[in-house]
Length: 140
Image (cartoon, rainbow, N blue to C red):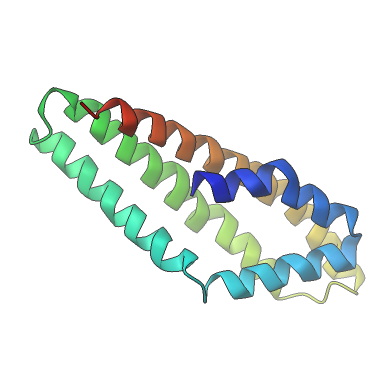
């Protein structure tokens, strides 16, 4: 997941912006429609469930001395990836999907979307990378 979000943070969103308002917005609308019908969604859900299980294992003490780090890594992933996606990125995706990018309203939504969605995506990227480091550190 860190790699997917990193891609959008580093170059994909800049590429969409360079296409111009209408083309960039249409490209992102297409991605948002296709992604929920791809292998991304099961990976999103299963990785979240796995990290919730790691939080539980870490908190109840079945993870040994690395339990605190395990719980922190899992929580960072769940809150920083899943929470930000559900609370921030998805509502913005839905708002973008509801407009016609060729209209002035659509262009205003795209401009706002580009700024806010990308910032939230930076948070998801850092959260996933941080969780990855913490979880690797728990390996013996």
